[in-house]
Structures are given as structure tokens and as C-alpha cells.
Image 1: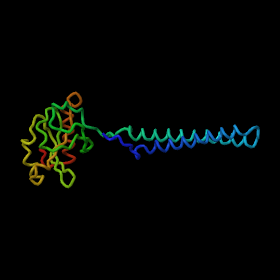
Image 2 (image 1 turned 180 degrees about the vertical axis):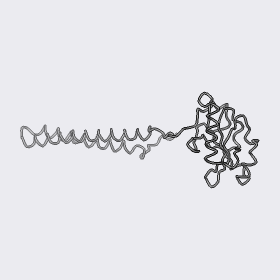
Image 3 (image 1 turned 135 degrees about the vertical axis):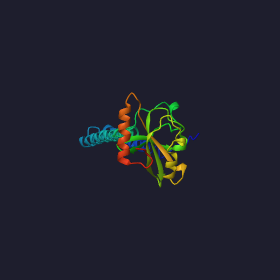
Image 4 (image 1 turned 90 degrees about the horizontal axis):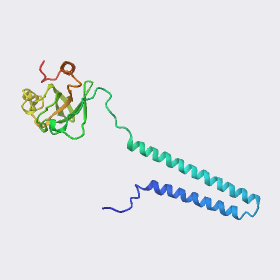
Length: 210
């Protein structure tokens, strides 16, 4: 356990502490001047000016602190960007899907946000209703090979698997998948077919069947 003082992390505290110390000294100085004035108008005015300056400095320090900590709070607690287009449907319980990361990522396909992509070999079976996209990763980018149903299928045994390999340089490790969840309480079968047709007509993946 590291109990050392982190100077960089606490630099703002040192700065504000130093400012308060200077202002405190200014208050003391103003008090001393007023106590030693002994009725001399010129010295009294000097003491009052010092006291006024001390109050102004205190106000400025407090104002800077409020602005600083407000900005720090907003930077740490600001809202995370959410997709503005139609996002993937409700996420099923972990027991219903394959080995996916705990926090979903998104990839934009058409006007829809699919969760993923994940390596194809890490998934065994999709048990909930969904539209799947199979992609080939090339030079950090993804080519879409297939858009269709995957519910209940073991994707490594899918009837289009050989087509996926053929269009991905025979490299299974570069095959990825993304999912647009379509729970039946939100999407009926007609709507699901419409989305699939829309994406296939727009993208025309090489391994999607008409």
C-alpha cells in the first residue's frame, strides 16, 4: 500500500491552501494596522483598504474553487454518448448468449447499432431472437459478409460458414460477429424480416441468401 503524498494529484489543494494563507496574512496585517492607528485617519483608511482587499481576495478564491470543482465534477460525471439512431434491442441475460464481454460495444450497420463485434469462435450459440451480422476484419476495418438469422445456430457450423471463410482469406480468427437483438415483445417477425431485407438490399453481403 502506497501511503506517500502524491504532489501532482494534490497540487490544486496546495494552490488553494497557499492562497488562503496569503489572504489570512492580509487580514492579520489589516487588523494590526487598524489597532495601531490610534485615531490617525490616514492609517485607519489604509487599514480599511487592506481589510476590503482581504475580503475581495477571499471572495475570488472561493469563486475560483467553485468553478474548478464544478468543472472537475462535470468532466468526471458527464453523460456517456449514446447512439442517436435506432440502437440494438434489449440485451438478454448472460446465460442466453455466448461468451461476450460484460459491457456491450456498438458497430453501426446501416441505420442500426449492433452490439459487438466479437470474435466468431468465442460464441457458441444465440438462443434469443436476433439478427446477426458476420464480418471479416481486415486492416482494422470490417467487411460485412452476412446478415441474417442466427437464433439457435452454432455459428461455427452455420451453412454459410464456408462462404465466410472463403471471403475472409480462409482465416477463421478474422471472422467476427455482431448482433441486433430483436426481442419479440418489441419486434414482431414481420418487422424483423423488414430490417433484414433493408440491410441486405443496402449492403448486399456476399454470403447472404436472397
